[in-house]
Image (cartoon, rainbow, N blue to C red; front, side, top):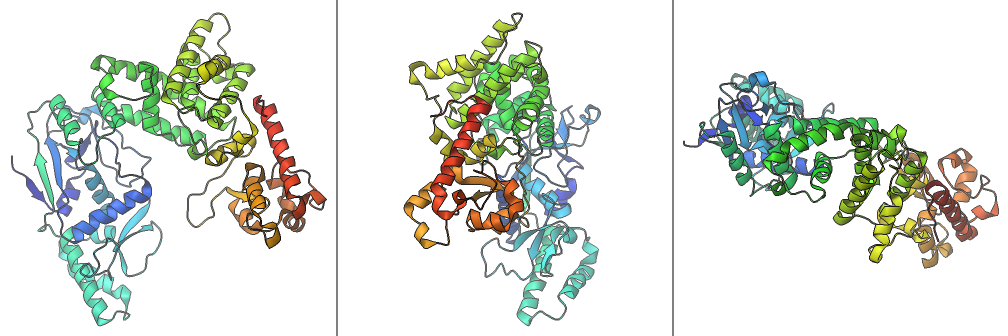
Length: 565
């Protein structure tokens, strides 16, 4: 069958009317949020310049195939639910196997919003003289952009009979401020935008339909093949697609659990790919995910294990990660693989020993905490470590059932690490001064405080790290290499609210706390609560920091049973 040329308006009109996404299709994936926006700018800029934006691979089929709709209001943490089985045999459905990213971007930006932002175009942008994609900009949903920026969803809401009304409305906003040359640019852009997004004569999309009599397995094979170039399918995406052929809502369930974990932890985001890796480990006994190692006969086992893991994951992140450490952001934990054996312990305790976290004995919980801290400090991030630790844990739980000895096998893990000097396991004081994991170190040393994170650019980041003795002191004679080295240690750092950090700035601690004693409660492990004491003076910075160091190490020894030297 020949290609079908399609206008942007016709393509958007077909979405969620006859065009849908097959269940096996991966979620929208154009990188991080900022990168997604840049890709969208380039996509729309290509349209402005009349560049074709590629071919869609579609499958018109009357077969009973699980599918879902495109998102309207796009949010990267949402995945549209699979449609009810009753409509899977919809006679006029066309499933999109290649082109999801482009269509989702067009659909959300022309009718709805993207991450609660509205895509706007600068009507004073001249594409003839500027070859970049700077004509586009996202505004927050409720913001009122400068009159020169036109909301594209406003443009798309007009029909082809309203062109004169549309242009008059837009030009009225400028008043009499436009110069002759600027007015020409605005009129050109208005006409160009109208032709692209309201009229249907310009067809920059092409649709290539697969034969309707193909089997689902044949189409799945085509899907995998066409995604070996361009934005290549990841191993997780290939395995998800395999499982979704058997259970269409499998990935949807994983997404829901990830959202639930984020809710109960007040912000910790685990990705669906990380979840799939854990399921893979529990079944294939290895964390290195490889869809080629999964036979069709094993798909049901993936579905069954996931059914048991859902509540286990929620408990691990809520009861252990959040309640024990108040960790509410995944970026606090730099190394994710060392978490997998802990999750495996939760899983085997639930499915083999029949115990929930509330049934774990104090010794096990303390050993889990000790493992958690040491694994991050010592960088136990190897695949082989996760595989072997999980094997040790499974064997220990299975052998301990009925003997009341299902405790966390911390000593066996340490013995494995120590054997042949595979990796260091003795904690020393400078392990706590690793710049790469400072947020983690500060968090485990201050487990009772929840760090609050603010994502909006209008507010200061919370928390921020305060150097108690400032990096750039006012007294130049103090600002020596020895001083800078001393104050750049974790023993001189404290997470505080952004606004408080801003207030303190480079003020020496003695001066700041004498003037603002109410803020003493924001800092931990202080030598004392009397900033008039001589230990707080600029000259005593080394003594102050060493006292704080000893306090912090004493806490680590008592809280986690660490023997630091």
